[in-house]
Image 1 (tube, one colour):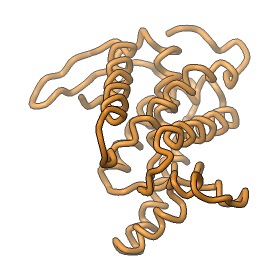
Image 2 (cartoon, rainbow, N blue to C red):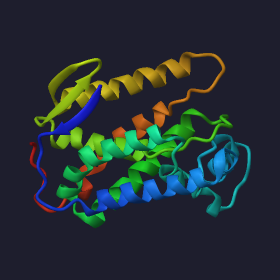
Image 3 (cartoon, helix red, strand yellow):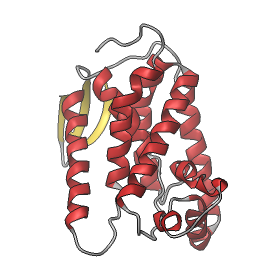
Image 4 (tube, rainbow, N blue to C red):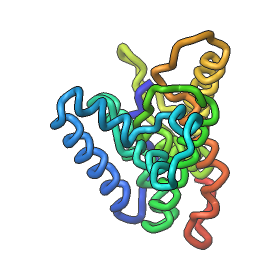
Length: 221
């Protein structure tokens, strides 16, 4: 299911949402300028490799990848998918939080998503990269704040549906739980999708969004 647009209008220009999209895009341009080998090396330095923290005593500065991983991507499709969802839902969440609160909320959700991924993948030597955990936090906030909104959704090959936001986002969240649970039950191998980062980010957004709202801004839409 591919979301095309939502029905919620913003009252303010989504400056932070746009800046985040630009930063992620510029970082990815830098990544691809390094070539494939350079991208791989960068993902091991600034991406999150859980086993590094499980098996070593590391200085505080080496915990930066729990945040920097949210600004790296593995491919154009990975980047575009995350940035499109951020654009679709981020403007409305930013609208209710304001610029400073929104960037703090976004980064905290990204951090908690990274911690969740780490907790469920302690021995993994595979670096995880992507903004999807932080973006999932935005989705979690939108899920509760704008549950009556409509999300125009394309279902290949040629179906269009106007789903209530709570159905679209709730279904997405359930697919992540299913994917995460399947990964826990499987023997050996590493999942290509960081489902638990998505789940952690989504739950963080649901639980924390009220703390970041402008005064008197919470009104279910």
